[in-house]
Length: 155
Image 1 (tube, rainbow, N blue to C red):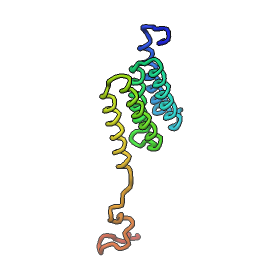
Image 2: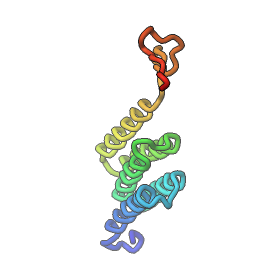
Image 3: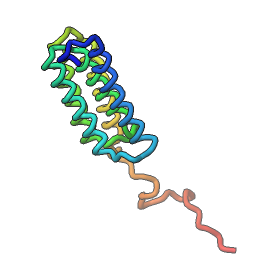
Image 4: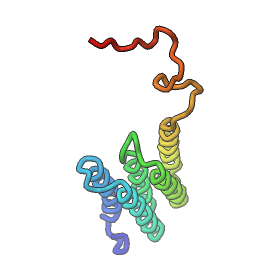
Protein backbone atom coordinates (compact mmCIF):
# COMPACT_ATOMS: atom_id res chain seq x y z
CA UNK A 1 0.00 0.00 0.00
CA UNK A 2 2.88 2.36 0.71
CA UNK A 3 4.25 1.56 -2.72
CA UNK A 4 1.09 2.87 -4.41
CA UNK A 5 0.95 5.93 -2.09
CA UNK A 6 -2.46 4.87 -0.87
CA UNK A 7 -4.08 6.87 1.95
CA UNK A 8 -5.12 3.54 3.52
CA UNK A 9 -1.52 2.36 3.92
CA UNK A 10 -1.16 3.47 7.58
CA UNK A 11 -4.43 1.73 8.48
CA UNK A 12 -3.26 -1.59 7.06
CA UNK A 13 0.19 -1.12 8.54
CA UNK A 14 -1.31 -0.63 12.01
CA UNK A 15 -4.09 -3.20 11.90
CA UNK A 16 -1.96 -6.01 10.43
CA UNK A 17 0.62 -6.40 13.21
CA UNK A 18 -1.91 -5.60 15.95
CA UNK A 19 -4.34 -8.20 14.63
CA UNK A 20 -1.62 -10.81 14.19
CA UNK A 21 -0.33 -10.30 17.74
CA UNK A 22 -3.88 -10.60 19.08
CA UNK A 23 -4.58 -13.74 17.05
CA UNK A 24 -1.34 -15.41 18.16
CA UNK A 25 -2.06 -14.58 21.78
CA UNK A 26 -5.67 -15.80 21.66
CA UNK A 27 -4.89 -18.99 19.72
CA UNK A 28 -2.11 -19.85 22.15
CA UNK A 29 -3.81 -18.98 25.45
CA UNK A 30 -7.48 -19.75 24.85
CA UNK A 31 -7.44 -22.57 22.34
CA UNK A 32 -4.01 -24.08 23.03
CA UNK A 33 -3.55 -24.99 19.38
CA UNK A 34 -0.35 -22.98 18.93
CA UNK A 35 2.61 -24.17 21.05
CA UNK A 36 4.77 -21.71 22.95
CA UNK A 37 7.87 -21.79 20.74
CA UNK A 38 6.04 -21.15 17.44
CA UNK A 39 3.99 -18.40 19.11
CA UNK A 40 7.16 -16.56 20.13
CA UNK A 41 8.65 -17.24 16.69
CA UNK A 42 5.66 -15.78 14.86
CA UNK A 43 5.75 -12.67 17.03
CA UNK A 44 9.49 -12.16 16.49
CA UNK A 45 9.15 -12.70 12.73
CA UNK A 46 6.27 -10.22 12.59
CA UNK A 47 8.30 -7.60 14.43
CA UNK A 48 11.26 -8.02 12.10
CA UNK A 49 9.11 -7.89 8.94
CA UNK A 50 7.28 -4.80 10.14
CA UNK A 51 10.62 -3.12 10.94
CA UNK A 52 11.88 -3.91 7.45
CA UNK A 53 8.73 -2.46 5.88
CA UNK A 54 9.02 0.65 8.04
CA UNK A 55 12.67 1.17 7.18
CA UNK A 56 12.12 0.63 3.46
CA UNK A 57 9.35 3.22 3.25
CA UNK A 58 10.73 5.48 6.00
CA UNK A 59 7.60 5.40 8.12
CA UNK A 60 7.57 4.85 11.85
CA UNK A 61 3.98 3.87 12.64
CA UNK A 62 4.25 0.21 11.52
CA UNK A 63 7.43 -0.22 13.55
CA UNK A 64 5.85 1.38 16.62
CA UNK A 65 2.69 -0.73 16.50
CA UNK A 66 4.58 -3.90 15.58
CA UNK A 67 7.07 -3.42 18.40
CA UNK A 68 4.37 -2.72 20.98
CA UNK A 69 2.38 -5.74 19.80
CA UNK A 70 5.51 -7.89 19.89
CA UNK A 71 6.41 -6.81 23.41
CA UNK A 72 2.98 -6.88 25.02
CA UNK A 73 1.75 -10.09 23.38
CA UNK A 74 5.05 -11.80 24.15
CA UNK A 75 4.81 -10.79 27.79
CA UNK A 76 1.22 -12.06 27.97
CA UNK A 77 2.00 -15.53 26.56
CA UNK A 78 1.93 -18.04 29.43
CA UNK A 79 1.82 -15.25 32.02
CA UNK A 80 2.76 -15.53 34.98
CA UNK A 81 5.01 -18.50 34.11
CA UNK A 82 6.43 -17.73 30.67
CA UNK A 83 9.25 -19.61 28.97
CA UNK A 84 11.95 -17.11 29.93
CA UNK A 85 14.69 -17.96 27.38
CA UNK A 86 12.39 -17.28 24.42
CA UNK A 87 10.80 -14.35 26.20
CA UNK A 88 14.28 -12.90 26.70
CA UNK A 89 15.02 -13.21 22.98
CA UNK A 90 11.65 -11.64 22.19
CA UNK A 91 12.18 -8.71 24.56
CA UNK A 92 15.71 -8.17 23.26
CA UNK A 93 14.31 -8.06 19.73
CA UNK A 94 11.57 -5.66 20.83
CA UNK A 95 14.09 -3.33 22.48
CA UNK A 96 16.32 -3.37 19.41
CA UNK A 97 13.35 -2.61 17.17
CA UNK A 98 12.28 0.13 19.59
CA UNK A 99 15.70 1.72 19.28
CA UNK A 100 15.38 1.44 15.52
CA UNK A 101 11.90 3.03 15.62
CA UNK A 102 13.17 6.04 17.55
CA UNK A 103 15.68 6.68 14.79
CA UNK A 104 12.86 6.83 12.25
CA UNK A 105 10.69 9.06 14.41
CA UNK A 106 11.18 10.77 17.74
CA UNK A 107 9.23 8.58 20.14
CA UNK A 108 11.20 8.05 23.31
CA UNK A 109 8.01 6.96 25.06
CA UNK A 110 8.21 3.69 23.09
CA UNK A 111 11.58 2.86 24.57
CA UNK A 112 10.29 3.61 28.08
CA UNK A 113 7.33 1.27 27.61
CA UNK A 114 9.59 -1.47 26.26
CA UNK A 115 12.06 -0.97 29.09
CA UNK A 116 9.35 -1.12 31.76
CA UNK A 117 7.88 -4.35 30.34
CA UNK A 118 11.36 -5.86 30.08
CA UNK A 119 12.25 -4.90 33.65
CA UNK A 120 8.94 -6.25 34.95
CA UNK A 121 9.57 -9.58 33.23
CA UNK A 122 13.12 -9.69 34.60
CA UNK A 123 11.76 -9.14 38.12
CA UNK A 124 9.19 -11.88 37.53
CA UNK A 125 11.93 -14.20 36.28
CA UNK A 126 14.13 -13.41 39.28
CA UNK A 127 11.32 -14.02 41.72
CA UNK A 128 10.69 -17.45 40.23
CA UNK A 129 14.14 -18.68 41.24
CA UNK A 130 14.29 -20.91 44.28
CA UNK A 131 16.83 -19.34 46.60
CA UNK A 132 18.33 -21.12 49.58
CA UNK A 133 17.43 -19.30 52.77
CA UNK A 134 19.74 -21.19 55.09
CA UNK A 135 16.77 -22.72 56.90
CA UNK A 136 15.86 -26.29 56.08
CA UNK A 137 12.35 -26.93 54.93
CA UNK A 138 10.11 -28.39 57.65
CA UNK A 139 9.79 -31.70 55.84
CA UNK A 140 13.57 -32.04 55.47
CA UNK A 141 14.58 -31.45 59.07
CA UNK A 142 16.70 -34.18 60.50
CA UNK A 143 15.95 -33.41 64.15
CA UNK A 144 12.48 -32.50 65.31
CA UNK A 145 12.08 -30.73 68.67
CA UNK A 146 10.34 -32.77 71.35
CA UNK A 147 6.59 -32.48 71.13
CA UNK A 148 6.56 -31.22 67.53
CA UNK A 149 5.86 -34.65 66.05
CA UNK A 150 3.35 -36.92 67.63
CA UNK A 151 3.28 -40.51 66.52
CA UNK A 152 0.02 -41.69 65.04
CA UNK A 153 -2.04 -43.86 67.33
CA UNK A 154 -3.33 -47.03 65.85
CA UNK A 155 -6.79 -48.09 66.88
